[in-house]
Image 1: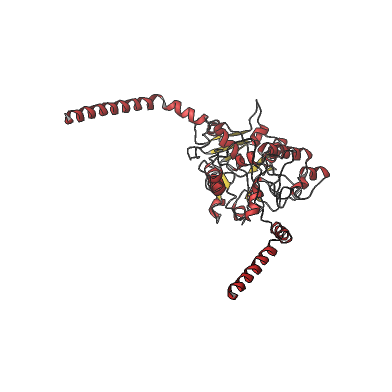
Image 2: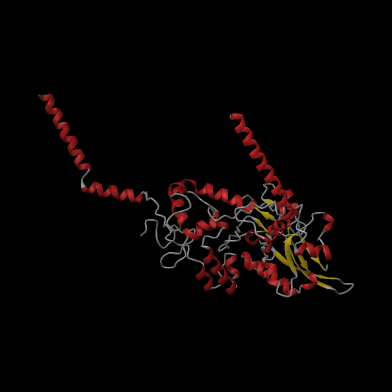
Length: 256
Length: 179
């Protein structure tokens, strides 16, 4: 009796297993494309850790941006994160700044927003003695201010001069952007928005200049070939600033 | 007999000494000195908008810092932004404005965190970077700062009377005894 029962149970579980296997195979054929689309258009849930399946990047079309657009980017960033100019340019915080370029030969003028380029191989991370300067799995380069000792080595290492140091005591910081004396800071790519909205997130600077008919700043996942930023990059290409350094920045510029 | 009489007189003296020791005058002096010793247990203001914290009070008293440390690393490094142990969540509940609408700042003894940390001689630096006000209030103040364009506040210099009005006074208006 016992053997009969065993055999019956075995056949039963085997058939169930094969059924599961085949249905899984079917599911992977028919559902996979849908799942992919679903994953890229949805934000991760709040309890989920970020992973390297995405790489956030930003594409800036400098020809579509006027100088006042760039100013709008800067002030939007200031409002979002609560930093501002106090008239001391040597020590003021500077998460994003305006850079004006002039080609003397053709007279072509460019105005572009300059900030942390969120490198794939960030030199600021290489040099940080405490590990406070780090690259998040999804490609965003950040400062963990809990471990930052304010040595400013990263500021020296950054070829884009993207980081600044807080010299004075601050009051009334914003909940989304904790900032304090003795730590280094830079553009976070509006990480609080990204954690909330995923691929649908719009960083504050992009929000300030993009409108219904116009989109000079595109934010998105550069790992996803179907994202707007990837398709634009594939079609039109873009420049990496100081590409000679081989840092592979996540911020790309068109029209330079 | 003589011996026992001597004992009794010693006993009487002892009683007398005890009596003097506990006379009202002595008691008054003792109470005074104990209040001068400042042994006053903290009375943090409990939030009224929730019945229960994220963990039982006993657990929170001992473990809140561990929850916060754990959560901060998860948030900063892995982007996990669950509300349960987030500092913003704590502040949204525990840093409600006082009954008269006054926003209590972290430096003031009536602030929820500061009440106990003063007593326990614990110096925290959370609020050197993090906002000590509920998100809504923080947003409002920052907006009004932006509108007034008071650059002075940022570098620690009050630019105008309006600026100092927004910055809450740092001197406590209520002492730790609640007087």
